[in-house]
Image (tube, rainbow, N blue to C red):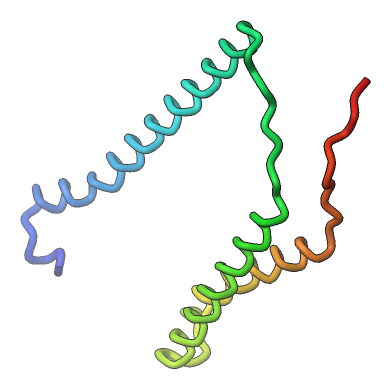
Length: 118
């Protein structure tokens, strides 16, 4: 769609759509976090709160593998489309981030048991 064919009022509306979308998204995220905070606070006051432990090891492995796969496919596609250009960064960035996750996964020793606090 060429913006030269749009009327000025349509151009204003089209340019406001992303701004309004981001603003509404930020408001929704804010209230979701506020709701979670108040729910946790009420559970602590009622004495029913239990701490959740996160198993980060599978998260880093899965995220790394997904980013490597996506980055590899995008890098190959952009390489065939434009050769060595700045477009190739669109695939190399997720590829390198995925490799960093896999290196972090291999290099870190994750705790398998929670600390005993006395």
